[in-house]
Each structure stands twice: as structure tokens, then as C-alpha cells.
Image 1 (cartoon, one colour):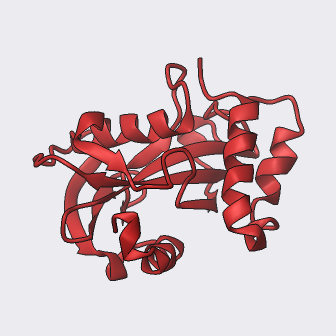
Image 2 (cartoon, one colour; image 1 turned 135 degrees about the horizontal axis):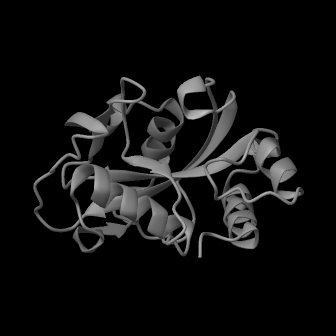
Length: 188
């Protein structure tokens, strides 16, 4: 069963308790949650949920993969699936699928076990080939530390490469800013 509307709402509210100034940014999510549509389904428009894994290695570099669909280097992530029980599990599944890193090779940073480091709302262009109108992704970005040596093995259907970037060079400015604010005692 995919993440429920209550789970999505509770996770977003826990995030907002840490970042109350982002309430307006997340308004599309709460507006959509007030409706009857399933935000965990990729064909829900005008907005639906996606999940990403921000993975740090032992030198605080962040894993980026080159997504074929966007042509951009981003954190591993994507749409939720019917078998995902919660948002963290969706992020871990995407990490495993796209980068070949299994869930047992990472651990959430302390304090981020169920609360995302960042939530980003971004526009997605219409894709007539997929029958998708322009819409928004509400991306829940969970942060993990690589705990076991593991080789990145990319999924070539969706990914064409990967790199480890210093956290100060992370593609997302909001993730970069939030990583910079983490206390070193938080395991970062």
C-alpha cells in the first residue's frame, strides 16, 4: 500500500515544525491533500509526491546521478510505487534501483529517521508522449550516511552516470544550505 495521505501530511508537518518559514512553499501539497486524489500516484495532477535519497559518504560528499529523463545530475529519486509503505522506504527503493546501493548500506542521519532534510516543489513540463500535462513534483528529500563500502551500480535505463560532489557543490541550493547548517555532532 503506497504512502497514505495522512502519512504524507504528518511527514510534511514534522518538516514544517523545523522549517516554519516554508509553509507557503508547501501550500500546493496541502491544497492537493485537501482533495480526494492519491498524491502517491504518479498520474495525479496537478501535483504528486516524489522521494529522493541524499547520500553522504565518509568525507561528506553527496551522491549525484545523471538522470536520463532530465539530463541533470541530481540525488537518486523518483515516484512512489504501490509497494512503498512510507516515504523513507520510497527514497531507499529509488536509491537501490538507480544507484545499486541497498537500504542496509545506509543509515539516516540522527534526527532525520522520519523527517526529510528538505522538501522541494518544482515544475515538470508537459510530456505528451506519456500523456502528462505540466505539473508539480513535491520531492521529499531524506538524508542518509553511507555505512558500508558499496560500489555504485547505475540503472542504465534511467541513469547514465554518477559522481560524488563535495556537499558545498550539491546540485540543489536548498539541500546545500541545509547540509551546511547541520551540527557536526549530528553525524555530519
